[in-house]
Image 1: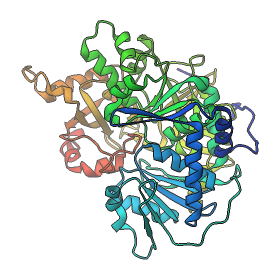
Image 2: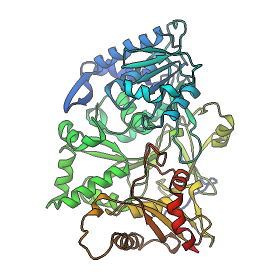
Image 3: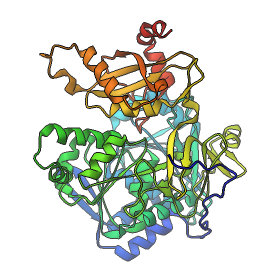
Image 4: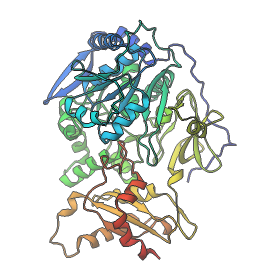
Length: 540
């Protein structure tokens, strides 16, 4: 067990940045100047890979920046963006940086009312929408008193408030607001996280330095760019290091896209890595290591995981097959990267060591605290929440963790998600859920039990569990046996006493999961109240 350090212990400190060029436009301009005619940005449409050079990307971004200013967007104005991943998403993002606008990306998976609420809340002067169907989804939910003008130009659809033409703008300064990201949050109403140019630029630069792969890699982006994980770790590290970035066509075409692109680097969430491992194991390949490398296109060098904990069994499987998954840790309020694993500095179960330029320490109650140029400006129009999250310059992450003697960080769970049983024992539900979903028979699991004598679970069986119906055991008995196997090394209080099988998975659209696939427990508890009621009385 790693040695626990508290706030009174010495924190990790590497020099903080105070560079006046700490902006995304400054890094972009430098990279375009250095690599102008080299392939920069690839995108796949209808199975075909297309490339744009750095110079072509810069020209399109500059042209769109001028259009944004021409319709009246001034530096500091919010521009909302409702779009799936596509080439135009990146051009729009870069254009907003160049124009000094505040980019407010919105997840396309949200309900219409949620999309409209975020557009209204940020006071967007301009809204980019990727297609007419998506526009129709939420346009009627926008208040009638919000003046709008429809432009069927570029990307495809834009909505803008009428205003006077904008004056020419100066390049943004490091402390200027660059983006507002509405956290999907596992509880409560989403809050707008305000990140400055310095927040984004220094975090991308530090992550690039930790990554250590240089500008010769080809990175395949499959994560949603509306989330800060992909935006910093795929998009902005690409801007900093001048590598090649390719947008996958869809999450369903990963296997084909890997063969087409032959990437050398990939950022993904644990769920994806687990399913790939299960697929290769189920294939019966004589050489799983060769099968794994073939799946990723034959040139893969670096797999990185974030957004959620990676199950120990999955981490071990990839390491044994010669292609280890490097874990990192962060949150939107930290731009997002706080710690990062490298080939030279990696430890089983850890999420790496803090990035250069950051201070990390553990509070007396076990909460992870962070301080540095990556910490957000605050929450949009919510000073009380900002004051609660940032105290004496330290960002309170809400995560429980430990630092060992070599400054490797271990995340143990969410502070507010601790389940306190009637026995007084405390349980981290994410740990139990990770153990359960490491099983190929269990697709998803949500654990409950606050105030009760034991845990209960909502279980979504994996599709593969439909096979083998000829077995003598019933499906429920088979899952019960699997739960016992998964938790055989868990503590007594971490055992699941009762469970119920669900006939559908948890979904983002129903508000049961965040876009990065974290569980929204309150919503799940509400949506599956009847199923929980079946097993609640039996816990006593």
